[in-house]
Every structure is written in C-alpha cells, then in structure tokens.
Amino acid sequence: MRVIVETLGLPTLAAVLGKRTEIDLPPGASLADLIGCIVQRFGPEARRGLLDREGRLDLTIQILLNEEGFVPREELAGRRLSEGDRVRLMLLVGGG
Image (cartoon, rainbow, N blue to C red; front, side):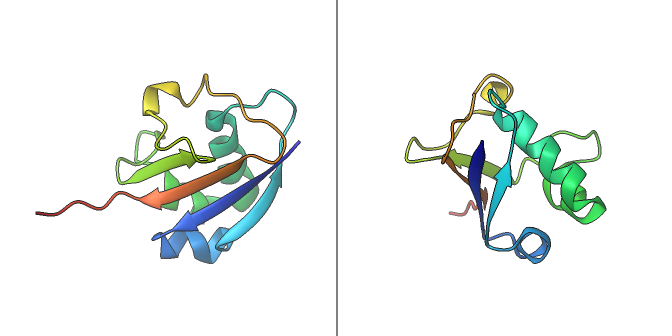
C-alpha cells in the first residue's frame, strides 16, 4: 500500500525526504512502522531528524493523519494505515 508523507517545518528532514513523498508499506502497517521504514530507507539523516537518542519519536515532532488531527504518541503502534493515507510530520511549535 502507498501512503503520502509530508514534512512541515522540518527543514533537515525535508532535505532527506523531500517536502512530499510517497512510501510503499505492507498492508496493515502502523504509523510506528512508517517511522521505522523512513529511518531504514533514508538512513542516519532521517534517524537524526525523527528520533531522539533512545530511538523514540522526537518530542518536537507531531504526526497528523489525514484530517483527523494529531495522533497521540501512545497510539502510533496501534494506528493502522490505509492506501492513500496522508501523514504529515510537523514541528511542534510553542510560544506565549
């Protein structure tokens, strides 16, 4: 199955992945599987752009699935993807 991955506000990751790319995954793959696939396919630069030192999704990155909004980190492994899903990786910005 093919999903669309977009990077928003992540210039280092966009340099590796591009601002928009399509990635093929096996049927039933989860968002966590997608992150693993990106790291495996695009190498150390993608790993540094996505993961913290412990290998978890960096706290500065949020994931949006289609138009559903942000996916909580504890749901990444259980959230299954479907053909044509749009996954946006974006920088978490805070301020006040």
